[in-house]
Image (cartoon, rainbow, N blue to C red):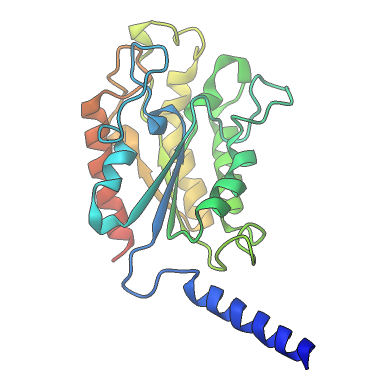
Length: 245
């Protein structure tokens, strides 16, 4: 009798969890923005000072009530799937390594925005645009992996994925990042077409930020100005609204 009651209780609990795991029809769910320093909000010309949430493009999304709950998960130096420094055991900035935890912590999720790629092109990584696009494909697959969204970790439904191609790097401005990102401008020019092809293959959504902000206008050529953040926020918000129609 007690065993039967326990099993019934467990079944009821699981059914209740499944029923609340995803947004109801017409209800807006949670958006996770998973990115690098332009999601974190690095202020160009500083030693990692941070813009307030009201300036960051992802923070601006959170101020748009129709989009629902927006969670910012930006990390300076985050790559698609590379440890930093290269070939080290330090996976802190490895986007693929950190993604499952970020997904589970914030589940249930409606949309996952992946805004990565620039840091792959640090000269020390020796990575080309094709390899970075392939790595983004692995990130999309990780979002759809059943392990992080299986009871009791998260929701049973896979969220939509929106891949953002990064803006270009203005190496002509010099500064502290010119040598670190040697060769990056040409790779970044090639990346959008490759990312779109990868997203199309995986059935993910795509937005090219280099068509919105061709190059970052910050003094270091890599990070966004407040005006850049505003333009990106508007473009991403428009894309999200289109996805939810």
